[in-house]
Image 1 (cartoon, one colour):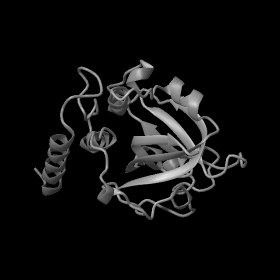
Image 2 (cartoon, rainbow, N blue to C red):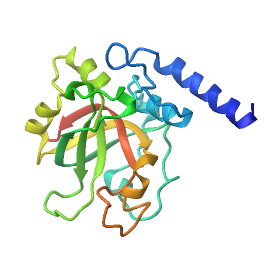
Image 3 (cartoon, rainbow, N blue to C red):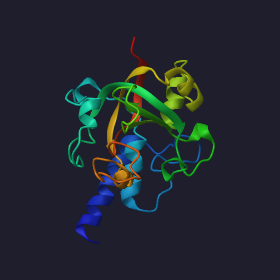
Length: 204
């Protein structure tokens, strides 16, 4: 086996040991249902369970800087987290994805929240932040409802503060203005996300 392949498998095993092997719902492991090792490793990052400590937060990250123009593939670090403030433009249930074992039930799928800098400028492309099924279950123990419907009804049009892990979702490179500038199909400003979201509140 090639050295790079061995290192990839070792990295995947390390992520599994950190995240755990219980999925967001029974029968779905933390690395989802992907065949490729690179996708399984990305799924493990999406399914991180630990809330970031103060030392994990990159204080230089803001919504404005995340959406700043330019190829941002290596601008941030997936081992760091951030807190950003923005206006919620849209909230919707995520797609049917390998990370959630191709679940169809909304409670077992991610919630996509679109953040923009200024709600008055409709032409802005958003930053995507995602609530995962595991974190939805986690905060429910504290009496919080992070279902897609509840988040839409309480957050739409509001200014919010969001904390979560930084993640570059390479699957969206060709749909983001910063990595595929000028494309008519671009629907987001950056392929960077806060994913998973670990804290969320409305700014007074």
